[in-house]
Length: 488
RNA sequence: GCCGGCUUAGCUCAGUUGGUUAGAGCGCUAGAUUGUGGAUCUAGAGGUCCCCGGUUCGAGCCCGGGAGCUGGUACCA
Image 1 (cartoon, rainbow, N blue to C red):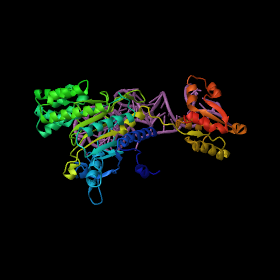
Image 2: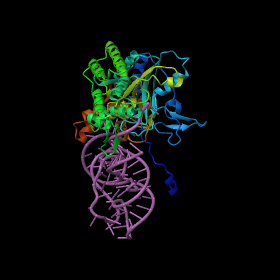
Image 3: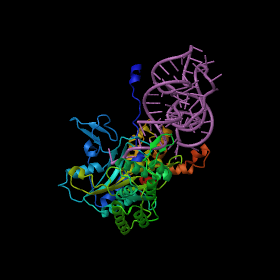
């Protein structure tokens, strides 16, 4: 190795926010995508895949900015010099598809989509730059019935993802209510409204105290950095805080309380009526208060929502290998976006949708050990001149549907056992001279063996007792292995 | 983007006022055991002290710049 070659040797590293995904994560992702997709399918949504790239102007406000073309999204210039970008969600591509195929598709148009989306943002724990979303939307239906249905679908999707009743909650709010709120608080300036909404959205994070600061002069964070506030008067802040904390024990009472706060404005009254109708349908669908709550502190992203908005949270506590609880934000969200298709077509096309962030959940499940992946049954190779026989044994297992592999390395028996241990194999098949003579195989149940050996401290006893190990006739091997791996 | 912290073995970290050959635990490899994954014991391998420059007789340690990681915050359509 010359100096020059050493200098050119690349460093083995990968860009942050794009984690390598292990077998356990992939298994969790597949299971979540499958089960959530089948909920969408059952509710009458059709699958649609629009591919990863869109023209940048179709995605939204990201016009080609020659200084920072990649802020927020991953964009590049096609060979015709036009800017294209990886989708950052499934909703914008859907709006483009609907507008492009308007004359050909049935209305209402209902489709679901599952696949990766990309965001060029600062990654963090459970925040990736590539992640999988499972999305369902219906286009062409105005009115709270469609929103209530979306909320019900969201609840069912959460249950399909493994959340029992009480382990998740869908929190619902309305942009109409928030519009009414801005009016009654006297927040008129567009820029200031944005600042106020963002501050309100932080209620769950910073509480009354922090939000008060953000609405007023501003707030200093733990590192000493200062966030400029909205600069509101105390009486304005009071109105806003009263609204945000207006959540009551159930939906009906929350509505009543909100009616008091913002019901006198036109937008507010519309929002109150809307939530009332949604509540009626949720009750008819049998969705209890513990699954769907009305929560005035839910805001969601600012840009395209126009009506009811909602957010799904998994309440179960996941702990990492050290036993520390892992915090991650919402795992899904959605709402009404009546303007998104109209952006392309000029005529109104109301729409509402919901999306689950699968990657975040899958990562938590894998990190908590909840999602485990077994290795294959390993057929040990003790006599090199019997490879054909070992290959047959492994093949017999596979033909019976058991994941199995013949050891292909060059090491002795002990390393083969270690290999099986590392692969998390449920069992190994051992055939040496003794077994061959007697026409039997030795099977070692590695999990039972490990359990049986837990109290053993003496290596001789461990070696002579061989916990979890037994002989059986070759003809019974497949059946015995199937019992061990839990297939019968 | 802004603010803070951190960077020494695969991992977690120690390293004295700036002084010879940079350490520990865990992990890894091998042996004790030629047919057995754990535990125990023994041995071994493993280092660009993040990078570049400066100060100094001498830098893992001091100074300047950069990069990366990480936490907070902002943004998140």
